[in-house]
Image (cartoon, rainbow, N blue to C red):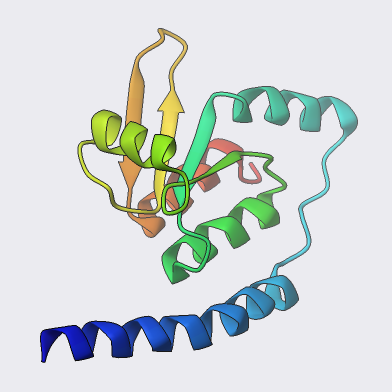
Length: 130
């Protein structure tokens, strides 16, 4: 019985995945406008960030939309399809749970921030309009 339930939900995910991805494309907001100098500064800060994600995870989509709204070019690492990223997430963050934002601080220490609402709050505090 357990195997039937597992395959049922895999089938549901396969059917919903294209709908979720198209919905993300259609509803992604326009990025905030910044001067070239401000955007260059934001881009340099984003080089120290990486988002571990699954492509069709609704919480990951929520974070990607916020990244688009804030005009952030953060590296996306697919922890579902790339075993190296999955292992890095497990070793660094302690668990394979997405979304997870890897934050490299100026002192070379690394923070792992889980939960879409926490990630969005962090991004807004750091890059949102003053």
